[in-house]
Image 1 (cartoon, rainbow, N blue to C red):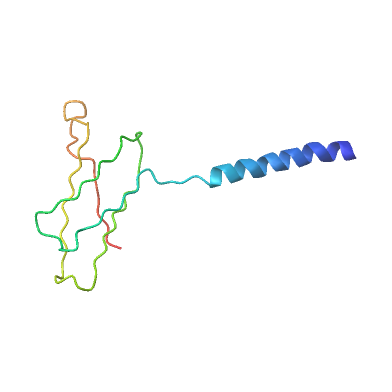
Image 2 (image 1 turned 120 degrees about the vertical axis):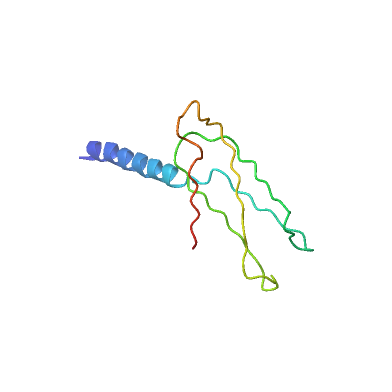
Length: 104
């Protein structure tokens, strides 16, 4: 009976280690925070984020913006520019990569 317990124990221990190794991975591919100067933000100010090249796939894009109570306006406009290597010659009919902004 004791001979069968040891292989079962090793199998269970190996499964626990495998599940632990897979569950601890960080899903973020890029994470960056940038401050704005204390003098404020003017209309023509720009923040740039150079994201390293990624593998093909679907990615969730989260862009967070934090403003203090002293922000004197009601609306914040944002312009997003994305540069990609796709061209109309290689993929006819493709002119953008389909970014959708959601309000939370």
